[in-house]
Image 1 (tube, rainbow, N blue to C red):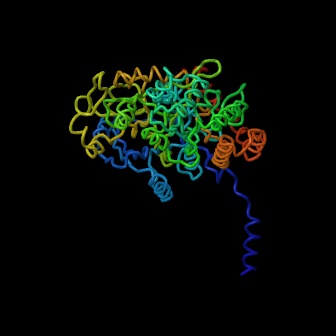
Image 2 (image 1 turned 180 degrees about the horizontal axis):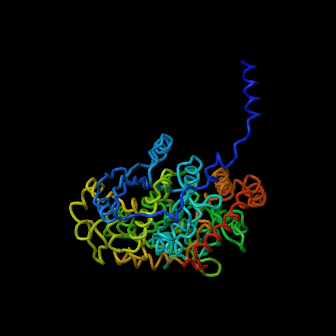
Image 3 (image 1 turned 90 degrees about the horizontal axis):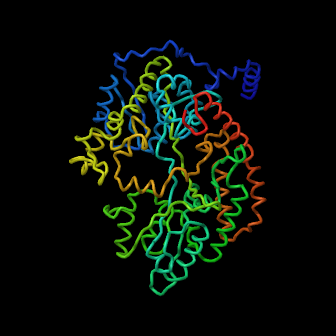
Length: 542
């Protein structure tokens, strides 16, 4: 047996190596001649569609599906998954050859995995621009970083999506009644004012029970994106993201300003201003539970008007009033930096990616039809609203006081909503047009709230949209973020010295950070080349 094995190994070694293009789907030449592709709109096309896995209770044949089928002369075959099936069942379906025509993916890594296994096809930028120019214009304006999500080795493998209103920064809220009791008459706007407010909320008995049992803040470290985010933003830093400094892409968490933010947080912790349990409590909503229980006076990431609406019995404000009828909740826009400018983190408007199954290389007219659908829905307000919510007067209605609201019996029947309207609004058109259309159908109070507390010009976001687009991220990013989280917490709580920050930076670079940054800078240059090709101006609008 050993002799046979040795002979086989020798034989394999003597075989000529296959060219890389034969094994790497990213290097194969697309067989589609896009100049020759013609889509006859009179021909009915059957299109299987695996959208975002957020509506597992939805059913095929919804009113929205029928409306789109009638308008575009298609027969849609939706594939509804929950998040568990998306992670576990979907790969098995693909490996078994059951690859849909249209595939939603939430992450650039997912796009690369689909490409690596040969599941998806190339679609040149010029094809998207030719058949969906208005869609491209909006993407270029508000989610232009998304072009990297579908890009690999200089070629494009999908259509990026966008969420037009997602450029607004996240905000906080304070117990205004507590602030008044300790002598503060307005919401803190700077780090110095926040420090003083936290000190008084800890030591001046804001709840009036005669005991020192309250804290101002219990930082949420359940996810890197919210960890001390408001304090770092006030130092002009995104600690767990890629940023642009002097024309180069850098990692925010190893910049000198990050050290300054850690020094401040360390001081606050030493003064007893932060709830020490934050280190042990990794539950995402633990801070909210403590806030509602009257233990905290400040809470980060309370972004939407719904949380402050006393007419909504499920809102944060209503639940707080149920605990303490005298409680007052005050929204807090992002803190001001040293120059007096408000700065707050946002994910940005670049969304996800729609891909096309590789088998559509034999039916490229389906790709053109889908692009035509995206373009038409983008350009037509009525069609957009019906693709999102159904028909006004039949499924929903609007008043400035209430905003958009569902009509009976849909308002009270979740199963009926799932069957009639998918119970969601981004399955077939996975984008939102807040500034273009939706602002006209939102509650007046909600619009005023966002314009007052969450102005887009205050936002900070990852320069590449998502760090996951960098190839080395698949190997190093999660480890680097976990390690950085541990180091930060240990510095803040005094288990490590602040002087170790220099050694931390050196180690971060050697653990894969330098490779991550080298690739990030290369991808930023590639992104700029894409923007030039697609007509993106420095301001974002073509």
